[in-house]
Every structure is written in C-alpha cells, then in structure tokens.
Image (cartoon, rainbow, N blue to C red):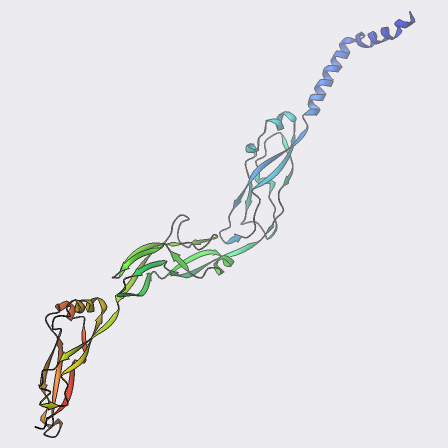
Length: 324
C-alpha cells in the first residue's frame, strides 16, 4: 500500500480544492497576458523640413528618424508608422550646431509612451540668403554668311536678379539663355528666350519656383566692306597733252553683297570720267589744270549705287601741250 502513497498525494494536489486552483490558473493566465502587453517597438517615420526664407541649410539631413514607443502589446501591435505622421524640423527655429528634432512634433497615439528618438547626428550649418544682379550672356550659336560679319549681341534687360545663399551666389558670374541657333545669317534679328538657372540652391528673385524670366536678344550683323579696283579710260588726248595718263585706277568701296553686283556686270561700263577745266590762274601758261570727275553709271541699279563710293571722286592733273 505504501507504493500508492505518491499517487494519492499527487491526486490530492490536483483535485483537492479544485475550484480555488482553477481560479488561480485563470488569474495566472490573465497576469501573463497583461504582463505580455508591456512591449517596446521602433517605428521609422519621415523627417519633414520647413525651410527658413532668410537662411540656406548647407548640411545634409537624414530623410527619416526612428521613434521608440512603449505600451501594451495589443496597442503597440495595432500601430503603424503612418499613425505617427512625420517628425518636423523648423529651420527658422534651429540653431547652428547638432541637429535636434523635437519629439513634440510627432503625433503620439493614445495608450503608448514615448521612449526615445534616434537619427543620424548632423551639425547644422547655415548660409545667409542674399540677392544680387547678374549679367546675361546669351547662348548664341550663329553661322554668318561669308559676306557678312557678326557685330554685336544685345540683351534687354541686360541683368537679372538671383536670390540664394551667399556662398552659392559667389560661384555664379553670369547667366545663360536658351540656345539661339541660325545658319547663313545675312540680316539682324530679335528673339525672346528664357534665362536658365546656373545651379541648384539659387532662384530668380521675384519669380515663382516654376517660372523663368525671358529676355529679348538682338543679334546684329552687317555686310563686310570691300573694294574693287578698275582702270578707267580718261577722255583726254594724252598724245597732245603731257601729264595725264590714258587710264586712271579708281577704287569702288562698299558692302561685299553690293560689290557682287559689279562682278556680275564687269562687261559693262561701270565708271565714267568727265573732264572739267580748272581756273586759269592755278598755274602759269602754257600749263593748265584739268579735273577728271568719276561716277558710277546707270548700268548699276540705283539702290546698289547708293551703297557704293568711288575713291577718288575727282583727280586734278596739270597738263602741258606736247611739243610738235
């Protein structure tokens, strides 16, 4: 009978006062569930940065922060990162030095406790925002006709104001426009073009974020100047008079496109010479003075003649009769 002693004892432990023991078991389970609810969990949420209009941040900030919350297992398990919103950093209130994110900017759900916030350690460095005017250098890529030359490129307005950090603006010397392209250019023209931002971290003062100012660019070209030399017969009997040649070389000067018309009319008489007598008292007899005046003929179109000039227009000769 002694061998049944342990079994009788075990059955007594399990069955005696079973109601009390069942209650204790339920309480233990409840206690386990309650104690299991006390957990700590980390959530990664975005860091939103509010800019300071008077300063430019030079430091690179983390994009997210890690928030550690403590609370019941049931409550914590139901949370997601979106329930916490975002952490906010207002640069207008930030001081130079170590980055400090205020936990008060985070939406804290009910029933949980804030433990800590963790993020990359960054030293905040700022640069004052200033405004400066910069000259505009248009991006002109033109090919001028061989008979013409590029004279100038004019911009209106000639300067545009930029706003940005002092250090960023120190790296800017001028502003560019959208490219202007032409080939075979023979006349001046105007065009409206947008001005381009030279770099990140600067903006056009007085314009919206997506706006770009426009300027008027005038490209000025003109014909090149050249000359053609012609031997012009003189209407004087050089065999009877000494001191005057049979022909005289004159230069026709003017724009190259106009001179091209002379090249096409080479076979025609282009210059005429007219003789007029000088004053009798200019020289002592038997010498005399004659003037030869040179002019373009009607074989050249009037509008072409208006752009050309003859050098010399008149030539003075002192002549004497040839001894017989």
